[in-house]
Image (tube, rainbow, N blue to C red; front, side, top):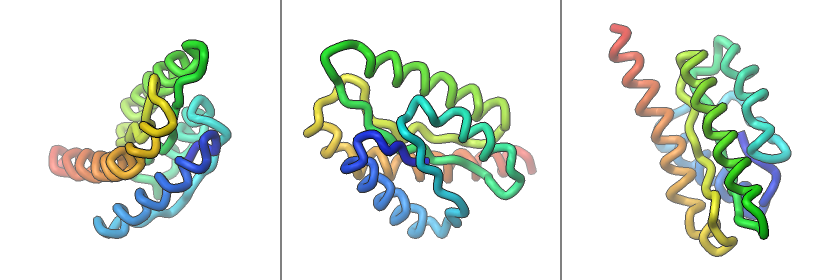
Length: 133
């Protein structure tokens, strides 16, 4: 799932995430684009209801503005994403950089955040399968 807000950054995050998924032999069956990270939870909820979806990777960049809006949006979204992961018993990664960062920091975090987001759902999904044996 990719946030369109800060698209110059998130489109590159998406490319890195696809590259990482390919290295791990993961099938990406659906890509959702949402206006911003705050819009992710509803779509994540719908995706996690599908039997062919084992996990969701979120990708977004929350850049600091002149208010604390970035903090409110990031904290709310992270909380809701965690709740959905537990509710559906499927991993959802937090591939969202920020809050409190500047544009240059967001660019510097493209690769590590995107790779970590994909690696996290891969590892958690495998761990859940191991526990369920």
